[in-house]
Image (cartoon, rainbow, N blue to C red; front, side):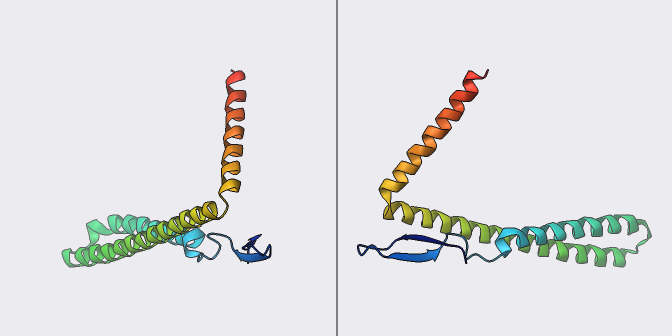
Length: 131
């Protein structure tokens, strides 16, 4: 498991805990997006087939095909909703972990912010001089 080591309390000992976001299920990462993409591709294929068959279908068969397509579309909507909720939860956990880390080590966080600001400033200044 990926972990980070940080000072643990006043004793100077070190403790290990998971990095933020590493304990997440793979659903949110790549598997969920791949599943939604497969559903979208399947829906496109099914719709293309349905459109091709429309002239030869009876009213009853057309209604059945439409209902089947709508069920598949609802399933795809459900997967997108589930993925969105998982991503929202993961983002909230990352925000909470970052907030906790800043509270634990405010000086280190401040120095990191200053360092990033200086680097961004240098890059922007270099781009401005290269015009």
